Structure formats: structure tokens, C-alpha cells
Length: 607
Image (cartoon, rainbow, N blue to C red; front, top):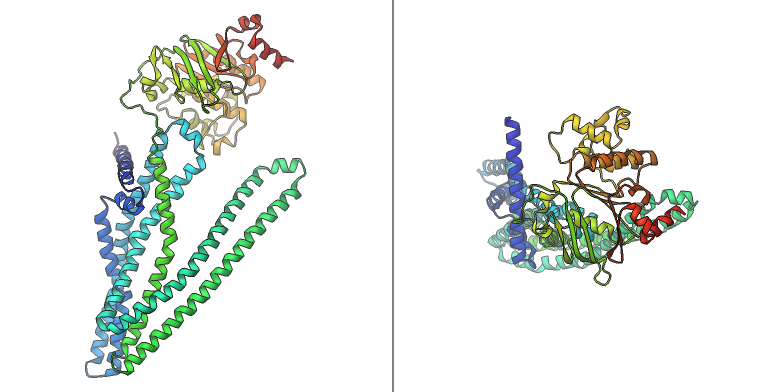
């Protein structure tokens, strides 16, 4: 094994362990402190506290010029006004001291950022990894109930909001606390009277800002919702352009969008006005109190209670205090958003609807015998899809499931795959209750071709060999030929290494479906599930693939759902599903001679 490969595998192993540790830690602290998100956040960073301690120390030193400048400024003013033989050396010493602190900022800022970022980004990656890992464990039922867009938002936006919250808690709050602490400490050490002035006037200025912040938050919320609505309507408009154009409805669509865009403009205008008023009032209030501070400290200097240089010192610190309180108020929406995101991530990581395979029997061989024994299943308890369904499938048989839409055909296929479990009754695989076996080990012997082909952005080769290693070119081309893809691939400049585009967007529907079929065939499965697998193919391609499938079905149990009943003539058995049960069962000829439910369905398609 090469050194590079060994390092890669070790890094991958470490990542998996890291994601698992983050998931376990989140579940532990979230279960204890569900209503205290900050406690959850602190718990997530367990093991990284030393990094934050180092970051805090670096931050304190690198930030010292900000709160040391007023002291140096006051010293130099006092030296200049008081005079004396040591004025020049002491001014030089104060200046050199401040420059030294400024020069320290660069290396310490690097160390501070490194320590903080290592902690926050590791936890951020760990949270995303934990979410991805959890989503792979959650049941298909869970994924059907939760919109994929919401899950994507949790992985990307919510985790980013948690990382931002981490930065705000460990960085911005540290900055605010440090500046307030130093400002008040220096002020009270030099003059208790000025400190009392600060204590009285600062809250008044802050409350003025709070009054406006609430109104701004309301306007921001209105504008955000209007933007979200507009975004949704724009997406809908783009998707409907072919329909709109086909029915000459362009003007109607333009009018609808113009109305929506005007609503956004109005909400944006209201937000701009309130923000402008807040800025003007806030500036006036701040400057008024700054003037009061200047007048008050100037009077004290006149009375001889403070030195002249201290006027500049107090002015600077008063400005610092008001700004930091304003920053704290500004942080509140970010903190609120971050804590909400913690709860959002918790909804996924604490979800219990997972496919439990641990401790169950691992399958090393599959013959392909299935028995559905008195199965009942319902998505809605008041309307069961299956109710007393029974079916026996022998190894190597091809079983076609037919029936009206909603009869339960896809539900049965999902039970074969293991996505759905019966509410009552049992499904047996080779005589073993499927509820007692490790489904992951069983699915290694399974191949599925869904009704809608699912491709990822990559090459044709990548999509066909997905999840498989060391596939020979000979075996790959066997699958390609069996899926009737050979001529198509030879016509491409890149051949098998041609990119298919996002979701296979560069290919036709039939080409995408044939790639899905090739992906299934190359796995050499013992059980095949075909859910309308040839629905996207033209009649010529369909006939050729049907012939190829007939050859490949030998020795494999195959479940087929097909609405075009002419395509299942060669199935070993046909099961007519309806009213929650298997209404008829037999060969194509037997069911046609019986002139029952299947005969009726077949006649309806030929009329």
C-alpha cells in the first residue's frame, strides 16, 4: 500500500470517528439541556476548551492597543501641558510602548485565528458529517415525510448559523466583555464621579437604541418573508415558462410578478426608512451624550478634579462603552438564529426513525424465495393499502405486479427492498423473517431500477459502476450491451467517460433509464426490482432490453411493476393487486382465460 493511500485511509477513518463523536456528544448535551442552547453549544466544544483559552489570551494581548491608546493619549497630553525636563523621553517611551503593542497584533492575530478556527471549523465539519451519517441511517419513511430542501438547509444553513453563533459567543462577546471591563475598570480607578456619570447615561442611550431595534427587527422580518415568497414565485415562474409560452399567458405572468415585486419594493422602502430614522436618532442621541460627557469632564478638569489629558481618555472610553452595548444589542438576532438552528439540527440527530441493523443476522447467501404472510400496511391508518395480502414467490421466478394506481404495487416492492415494514404479518426471505436480518447485508444481493432514473453528476462509467470496485472492462461492457447502450456510448467523443451533467441533464429520458438498468445489471444480483423500468424507452429499445432482461433473469428472482400489460407477457407469474389483497395469481395465459380482473385490465388497454 502506498504512503499516500495509507494516509488517505487513516484520515478517512479519523473523520468517521470524529463525526460519530460529535453526534454522540450533541445527543448527550442536547438531551440534558434542550431548553438551554448555549449549554448545548458549550458541550459541543468539549475537548477544544484549551484552544479557546489560547485564543482568548492572544485576543487579550492583540486587542490591547484599543484600550491602551486612550491611556497613552492622556499621558502624552498631560506631559505636553505640564512640561518638565523628562517630557520628551517619556513621550517617546509612551509612543514606543504603543507601537510595540500594535506590532504584536499581526502574529497574535494569526495565532488567535488559528486556535479559534481549528475549534469552530472542526465542530462545524463534525456536525455536518454527523447529519449526513444520520440521514443515511434514517428510514425511507422519514425521508418521504421531510422535504429534501429542509434537510439540505439543516446541513448547510443551520450548521453555518451554529458556527456563526460559536464565533459570536467566543469572539464578539469576548470582545464586548473585554472592552466594557477595561473601560469601566480604568474609569472607576481614576474617578468614581465620572464612573457614576457613565452608569447613569449609558443605559439611557442604549434604551433609545433598543426601542428602534424592535421596530427594525419587525421590518426586517416582513422584508425577509416577502423576499422568500418572491423567491418561491420566481422559481415557479421559471419552471412554468414552457406552459406559459404554450398558452400565450406571458402578460398574465408578468402582471403577477410585477405585483409581487412591488410588494418587495414597498417592504424594502419601509425598512430603509426605519433604518435611516434609527441611524439619525441613534447618532443624535450618541453625540448628545458625548457632548454631555465632554462638558462634564471639561468642568471637572476646570475644577482641578481631573487632569486635562483625562478628558480625551473619558471621551474615548465613553464612546467605547456605548458602541459595545450597541454591538451587544446587534448580536441578539444572530444569537436567536443560532439557538434556533441548534434545535433544528437536534430534530435530525435525535430522530429515532432509523433502520436498525445492529445485532441482526448478516446474510451471506440469497436464493430469492419470498413469502408475504397476511400482510397489512397503511400510510393512513384509516385507509390501509394492504390488508391480508398473501403471496409466495419461488427462487428464480419473475413476478409481475399489476393493478390500478394506488393498489399497493410499489408498497410491495418497498417491502422486498426493506424500505417498508408491514404493520401486521411477516415477509420471509428464504424462510427468514426480514425483520430479523441485517438489511444492508441482504441489499448487496439486490438491484433496483426505479421508475424515475436517478443519476449523479459524473461520467457514464461512474454512474454504472456506482458503489462497486475493481470492475473489469469486460464486465462493464457486458452490462452496457445488455442495457442497449453500446451504440450510444460509441457515438460519444468521451465514450464511457462522458459527463452526464446534473441529474443526467445532458441525456434523454431513455438514455438515463438504460444507464440505471446497466447499473443494476453489473451488480450480478440475486433479486431484481424493476419499477416501470422500461417506461422511458421507445418501443425498439424496450423490445431489445426486454430480450436482454429475459436472458439475465435466469436464476434470479425478479419483481416487475408495469402498467403496460403487454410488457409482462413472459413473466412466470402475474399477481393482480387490488382491495389490499392478491386478487388473482397465475401466468398470462391462465389469467386471460380466466377472464377476471386481469382480463378486464388488459382489455381496457387494447380498446
